[in-house]
Amino acid sequence: MQTIIGTDLSAAAELLRRGELVAIPTETVYGLAANALDTDAVLKIYETKGRPAFNPLIVHVHDAGEFEKYAKEVPALVKQLAEKFSPGPLTFVLPKKEVIPDIVTGGGDTVALRVPGHPLTLKLLSQIDFPLAAPSANPFGYISPVTAMHVMDQLDGLVPMILDGGPSMIGVESTVVTVENEKLLVLRLGGVSVEDLKDVAGEIELRINQSSDPKSPGQLKSHYAPRIPLRLGRMEDLLSEFAQKKKALLCFRDSRADETIIAQEILSPSGDLHEAARNLFAAMRRLDRSGAEIILAEKMPATGLGLAINDRLERAAAG
Ligand code: TXA
Ligand code: MG
Image (cartoon, rainbow, N blue to C red):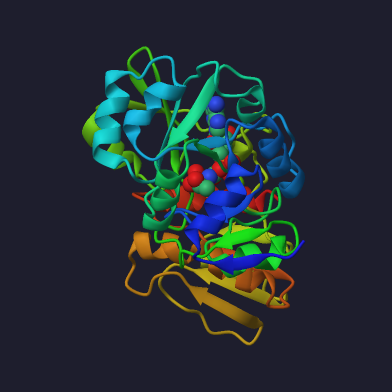
């Protein structure tokens, strides 16, 4: 199969109507999309990613008004949050309606819904009359792609088209939430910070699963993993622990000098966690190819998007 990279929306829409896959840009990471209402099309996602078929997918819709089409009930709190954060990096897990095939939800009775905040993909969604199921467009377990070229590097020949929407502006996946007894539960840390959720939802509970429960791949302990080992901690501790190793450094704002450092990425010289999130996955990919024996990653401040970045780095370190 030949893979086209481009911005031709009608070609992308036509492929999707025919039950083919298209890699799509979103503000978080690139997704590998198929018609969410077509079981055979969704099956191709699992095959292409090499992902276990019991892992549920996020269903992307054009606007939050569509949630009612696919969810049995939409709690008032979800509507309030969607009002503020959709389109954007927030995904809602809701009781699913019949129309959503089991293959999308891993056989479960809930569906994850999100309005992606990317103009090209929103335009694509307005040109088709079905929602798009899409996980991140990386082989299962590897680092999520944040440019069309990242997708090409790994899925060339496996998908007919990659829609190029430029680099993802958020850089980490969406925050996944659900409502239980009128309380907001955070199931995955992501592009909307816990602080911002609290402003709308009041008290919230973090239920970030650190287990290896295969039902929640974004919550799998080992995930987002580069091929070479990655260790996370205070940089000074890591540098002395791995003094002899040929190493690649993933730093927050300050660089380090040492002749055993063969590659180094500074996520945000000004200490801006949004910028750090935006640079994270591309930097991890470069370090993975640097020829180093190990990546030493500095823990981010545990606030705002720093929590989501640390979560990804912890999972990468477990790989
Ligand atoms: O930003 C994102 O969310 C990206 C873009 C493409 O939208 N997508 C993404 O998809 O990260 P994926 O498949 O890599 O991660 C989906 C996350 C997983 O943690 C999964 O467990 C959770 O959403 N999820 C999906 N459906 C669920 C459900 N019904 N109940 C609980 N968690 C669910
Ligand atoms: Mg993923």
